Image 1 (tube, one colour):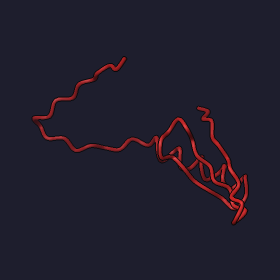
Image 2 (cartoon, rainbow, N blue to C red):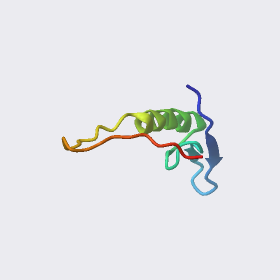
Image 3 (cartoon, rainbow, N blue to C red):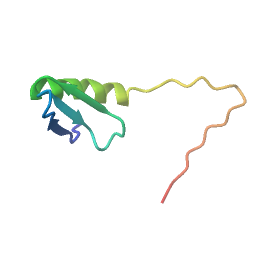
Image 4 (cartoon, rainbow, N blue to C red):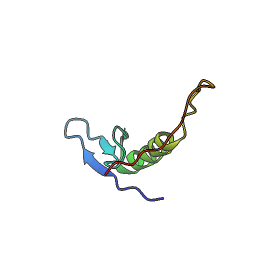
Length: 67
């Protein structure tokens, strides 16, 4: 799966900030552009990793559509 990411150099430190606009809050950084890209790959993988939810036996799960 491919994700669009935005890279921006930090004028003060020379490091690179990187984030994925399609995944709110999915951000990372690196000292080089390549390191920033490697780090955002790891951040995206963690972002998309399923988070198990412990539900009680009386919980009801439904899906809804938003238009």
